[in-house]
Image (cartoon, rainbow over all chains, first blue to last red; front, side):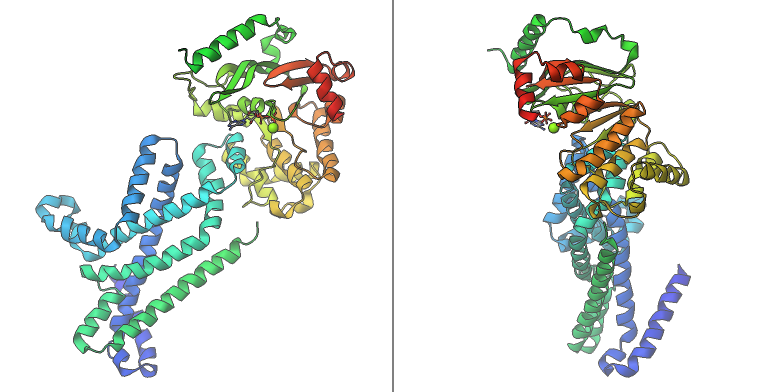
Length: 244
Length: 283
Ligand SMILES: Nc1ncnc2c1ncn2[C@@H]1O[C@H](COP(=O)(O)OP(=O)(O)O)[C@@H](O)[C@H]1O
Ligand SMILES: [Mg+2]
């Protein structure tokens, strides 16, 4: 872990060494903070996307399964997380559940005491709910014969869903999925309200020291760069899926 | 007031009682590779299959003909439980399809494992091909052997190459289904089915979605399969194929078997009025 941290700081220092001469003083002065925050945002985004995807696939399958219990549970989960503001979810988890303290939470306490872990958990659950809905939309739009042809060979329901249906659902849902990742990135700024020093968190700290409104513009530019990278990544993926 | 189920049941019994014993039951069950016994299927209140019994022996090529909506696809789809029959039993190589007795009119699959094994032994070819659109031709053929039979990729690939050669489209192996003509797609679909070496092949109007000039190439592949002794049940509107290739023709009339027999007899001198009418329309 510390090797990872060191590496992060090394990259951040190197980036700032290169950026400081070509950027305004008001940026250069706090450059390492911006870059560190940028990395925390990227980190939360990558982890919550990956974990959220696992949840999303499971929930989308559950919603299409014939098991009534799984079906209902998946619906309730996705309804609750899509129907409430991300900010409320973060605060309930951090200030609400977190305030129960070490004695009540027991082995869960290490998870709840850090803003970062709560942030990751909530972002994961939130994006999991949205992506499950996106995938479900893709899955129900695949011609019925695709699944029939799969089970007719003797593949199990799960095999058919995973190997035949899911790849096609991703193809259908890809643009919507790309959108959701950008939305998640922007939404992740809310974790700054629970003490996480992500890009937004660092920006707020910098502002409280400098009272210079320009710092929000720098933060906006960094978010835009991230959004551009995500969009490019999805475009690249789309081109690779073009055939077939 | 009697409920719908009771009405159905009495209708069924009276129908069965008027019926003469079928010649088809004289085939000993152990010779039968598929045996359908008194099959019924309803969608809600509408009964679409009303007591059908059918037997296929090894090497049989049975053609199912009849007007659109007469229930041909439904019978075929009941054989691998893509549809769950309302009543009746189906045996594949002596094994009963794993279905429970109806409870509140619902029959459940009692063993997923048995069902999967049976499905693997019944290859199904669909009217709309249903090739998996995200996989290339060769991947389509390798998929089930690898996932279901747990064959190695190399073995599955070698077998797929061989099958592609057989249906005459080796050069398309790395293309996606959408890049192929209908006739080529259907030939790939047949190869995909053959990759599991099924005991019986079920064809549901395999040429109905094709442009006329492509019908021949698919029928030729099917003729070859019949020649090598494959057991086949074919729903078709191609009367030439039914007459020349099959050894038994079943005319389906509104969910019941209207008439059946050897093609030479059924096509030359149909006994029932409905069959005569149907044949005069399609021939
Ligand atoms: N899923 C379904 N729900 C309701 N009715 C259906 C369904 N599938 C088929 N049917 C009806 O069952 C009858 C038989 O259909 P089908 O077996 O497809 O006929 P065929 O293949 O001979 O044209 C038709 O009247 C059709 O409308
Ligand atoms: Mg049909």
